Image (cartoon, rainbow, N blue to C red):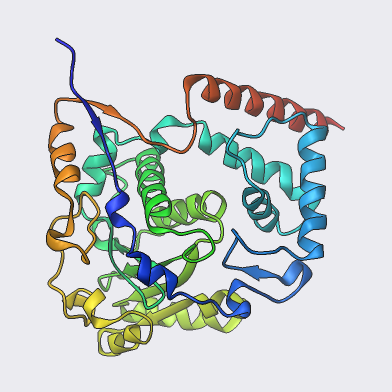
Amino acid sequence: MQQQQVVLNFEYLKPAQYLIDAIVHDPQYIKRKERSKSQRRIWENVPYDAYEKEKMADFMKIVTKNKIQLPADWKDCDTLKMVYCGKFKDKNYLKVLQSHLAWRAVPNNFQPTDINIAFLQKGIVYTFGRDKQQRPIIIMNLELVNLKQFSEEVYINALSYYFGIIKKNCFVPGKIENWVFIMDTKKLGLSKFPFKAIQIATKTMQVNFCGCLDKLYLLNPSSSLSFSWKMVSAVADADTMEKVQMLKPNEYPKIQERIPANQLEEQYGGKVANLTKYWPPINIEIPGGYTEEILKAVESMKTAEIVIQKEVPASEEDELKLQEQMAKIQIKKEDDDDD
């Protein structure tokens, strides 16, 4: 007997059109500073400056020189993001591209595997509400992070799959291209702080979700973490620190400068009951938080064959092509190292 196929449709996460239409970005939000100091938050449906175009051309020369075939859905904004990830330096582009294409070639980064869903059901990472510019809010509960329960590979797979859902269904090109990240430390001391898992999450986001972070809140810090943070803040890059804010519980009202109370859980000073069901992702703006379609689909996943609506790779043929490209890049890198 042939199994029923299930399509996971997360389009219900998209904000209402009237909210999208109301978004107007200041030019300094879209892009600020110049040349190698540039910082960009909006990548699509906006013009690029002469320096960015020059560096994009340099990147493509390296792609051509190494005979790399980019994925069929590759866009100019993908090229520009690789340029930014490579810090505008030719010597970095091949390594950045190698890392990104290797990530694209792993099917589990784009699929609701049993282990990915088990991870997401735990509430280690989930989404809840939007800020005043309709940017989705992603919460990570560090108290639940445990590399003994889930391997490093699972963290990469599950986070990639989840972030991909949010990016595809909550972002709107030219309007919403960033998220707000709340990292709840639960007063973990330095000895119990999951630094390695944070490093995994950060590395996954830096290249494969480049330019997506708008703001990071570090909440409920222990005294030891607060002290360490003050030392880091004193020497850290000012532009990086601008995106990061550490807040104790009595400072949570500051979050509402960016996120309305009706978009925040009570545990963070908001007016909405704390979430207890973390999968599938919730849209608190629609009745019940979910569509009947997604709830039925998630329930059916237990016995049915799942149809993955993934961006990349699109087929087994594409996966093979990406793997071939990776092999070519590695061979070229080894040849260059020998030189």
